[in-house]
Every structure is written in structure tokens, then in C-alpha cells.
Image (cartoon, rainbow, N blue to C red; front, top):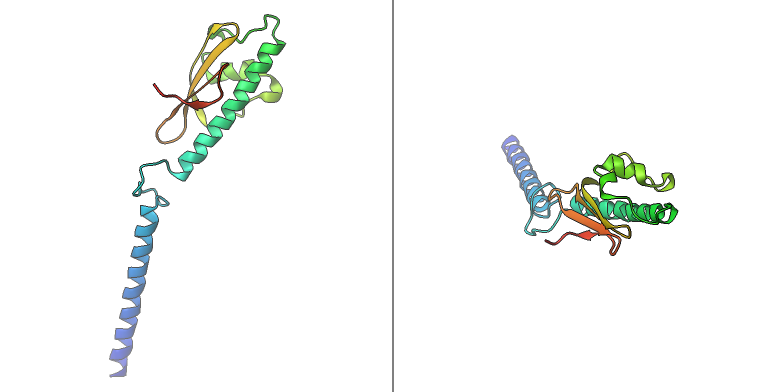
Length: 145
């Protein structure tokens, strides 16, 4: 009789533990902490961190291009033909404002329509591949077509 009660008690504890673990898993997944979309359609914390990192790096790029303009004999930004990739962008930035080897964005395009104007567009490395832009007139921002 005692062994049957002990076995039933053990089975009850195991079932309780399974129910608690399943509830915890569902709760974590619904909040987006385990890769689920959750009830919200907003970006995940990792995507938010990647966006902040990309915007910070674009601020550094803008400062570097401003330094390029101030140190240039022509007093202008690099021509559109000078920057067609992330490597060429790194090459024109001053060494003390150089980008790291791994950045939080992918180069998209750079255009300079006048010596005192430029527009740089990149894709953030978030899951939505958000397009960001920075220009001589404004700081980094999300591109809205």
C-alpha cells in the first residue's frame, strides 16, 4: 500500500514539473525571448540592438565624411564614383574615424549630387533588413519611401 502511494506521489510531482516547464516555455516564446514572434509585431530586442549599432556607426561615417570635406582641397564630399562599396567607404574615411571590420549594416548606395551634398543608404543587419540613410542635411534615419 505504501509503495503505491509513493509511486502515485512521484508521478504527480513529475506531471506538475512538466506542466510548469511547458507553461514557462509558452510564456517565454510569447514574449519573443525564444525566437517566437510573440503577440507584438515590433522588432525583437536583438533587432533593436542591431539598429542602434547601425545608427551609431552611421553617425561615425557622417563625422568621417565631414572631416574628409574639411580636409579636402576641393572642400567637398567624395564624388559618387569614389564610393561604390563598404571597402571604398572605409578608404575615404580618416584613419582615426575608421569603421571596424564588422559593421552592423550592408552598403547599398552613395551619391553626391554636389560638392556640399551626399546621401548614403545602407541595409541594417536586422531581420527586416531595414533601409537607413544619412546625408549632409540630416543624421541617420530610417528610409521612408
